[in-house]
Image (cartoon, rainbow over all chains, first blue to last red):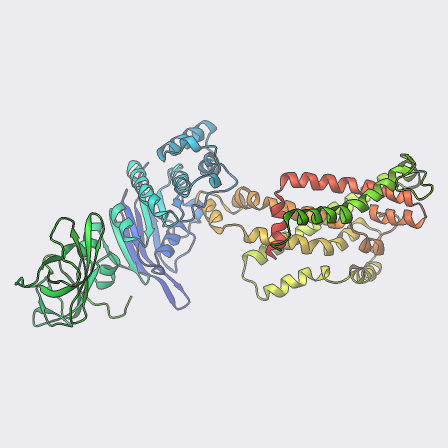
Length: 355
Length: 269
């Protein structure tokens, strides 16, 4: 399969006064797995519909390997799509579903048979070829959906929240399936999701979207470690947010006044300090040094491989910490010294309007 | 309800079925195949095919059957031509006053058929549509369309738009999408709507009576005419003939269509 480059060039879309997409610019190189990550209503699905041709943008161009397909109808774009609802044809068997796009393309019978077999084998469903969709589990149905979307070697594979309708236990299995198939085929893929763990695990690059805009574009690690603002930090799963004010070259926690040492280059005014629950270090009360808060253990939960703490500061701050099992435990009510290591703290500007 | 044993409920149901559906049919069959009803008998004294032979001699049975089938088929086609787009539009588009529209389509079934028949007869006499197969079929559309539209609305509402989108993504243009996705998915509903339309026309008596002529006698009308001539047994024989295609048609359809789909339209309305 020859991977394809996808360029979204200044895409805009409005519904009346509502701006669904605002000046989207994305360059997806050949073979890249890109995720569009954002909350519902952020425009990620609208953007996917523009790419596939179900919606015509008000402005901008969709370029596939250098040619402008913005006005090309969906059925002539030769893209593949995996649907949240599976969208398998109930009146066709598994093999007939996978054969459907091939029969539309008028390939020879032998060629079609070979490709259907190969595609079903790729998703480990060759034994179920004669079954009907209603006889399959959700996970199996979605694997048929995946096989059907790649069997005709589409230019680009689009995945619209493909794991959302699956049980939690099946989600990881299907995620690995998607990862393996897309890597094996070296296909350019665009994956829409609101689940940051899926996006982080699958993607070569993530475009975080909010209110019709791409608010950050980067590798999963960049997005996770250096979120650009508090919306993104919240969205990629930072458990702890402390409102701070930056003045005179140092950041102070608003409620307490404690100075936080951290990278605040280029920042001033109201900001938010973020730290992952797993990055917080708990020490017995009385420890001294910078970036510490004296808290009490409000709650403790044993989670198997780690212990979860809820910590409360007298000024009304609440923090969550995850500590590996085997370290010193602090019972409920104990006073502890909470260390927010400077290299684990991320301070970002506060978005003026709440997300 | 909970205190009534299931056996009693089932027994009542079977009894109702026997009394209201089977018994009248049995009486017609006895009348059609029986002879020598002397005394206060429950059963005829002998069995005969005489009434069928008599019916064949006095009545142009082939012609009547042909008329009935021709009119029913025409009515089915006319009904589908009307009901397919109407059902699609009501199911798939946001229309103003949708409920008023559905009410208007169902209206002819809410009022006495004879009332409608009088109006239809007046119009047909004025424009010379009486005693024509096309005219009678058009009149039957009034009876058939409400059922057909209701079934088709529910069929088209049940179509998953994402299946159509999936078809388009996989390379189906509008025409092929209709042929390969929409049509197969909607087929049970379309068959059910056709069945209702056909039978509504095939079984109709009142409306037909007002606009038929010598060239367009249908089986129900002929049954009535034979009765009027005093030949009860001949009328029963004709009724029996009338039954056969109805039953065959129904059995054939039930084989093709899940009965739930037939009910689906009515449940959804």
